[in-house]
Image (tube, rainbow, N blue to C red; front, top):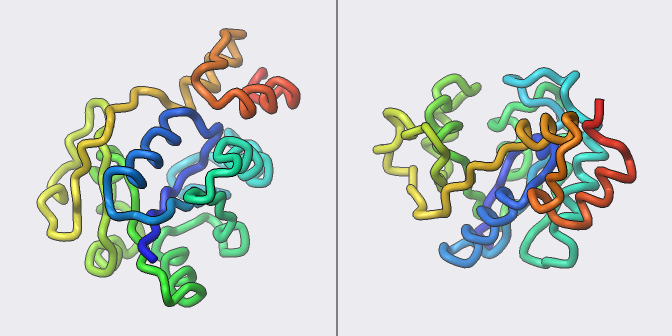
Length: 191
């Protein structure tokens, strides 16, 4: 089975993430998309993150009963910070029958050369790339394993959503309704 791995902090997950995952499923050859919640991205400060369990819960709430999508906590059991190559090796060992594809934006593709063992990732895995505002994807855009998708350009960001909530703005339509209710109930991002 061909599975797209959508890595992220999902702090919080928003409708842009879901639109892109849905696009990857419906307009490509993927059978499933797994949202791989990263406990700690090596390029981000951990202090700005909700706990990984709270973020995983928001992803689970967001995807609801969609059987083509899965909230994946595989990185919770691995050494932190989370390096994609370590996760991929672990997934390949655990699920040898699956064919994994990475899903990433042009912003991440542009910085892929900074990732641990990025050459190995490029040589062993296909990467489906969606557009991000103000990013071209850099030099790697021409690599044979890179597939540029004509996905919708999403200008939403988790950072902007967190800042808006802190400023007491109503951003209920930026996240799925059930996620918005959970954020309000738990008073996430208010301080």
